[in-house]
Image (tube, rainbow, N blue to C red; front, side, top):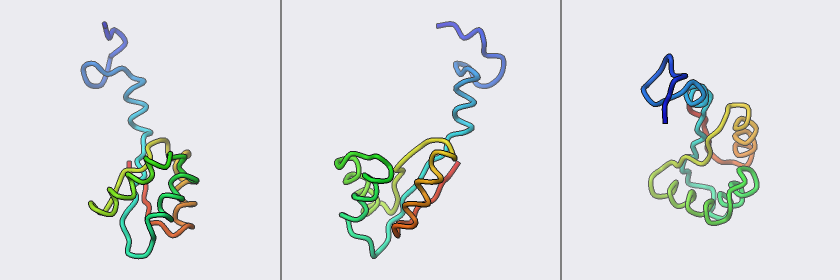
Length: 96
């Protein structure tokens, strides 16, 4: 497929792709010593719209590696979710 609209950026990327990446944030969940697996899973299902299997997998990744990428999106989409998760006692940050 030809990329005739690509006047800037990397070969093969169009301006829409570049714009999307510049507004893309990642929400990371960090491990802690006080939240249970069930609590973390319930929070991910209710706040982030994960299904139960996805939420359980994230909980195990956090437990064994210390952190997990739980959601990607725009800052305005993720900020309210981050605040709800923090209110629920989870350790969450947004990264660009």
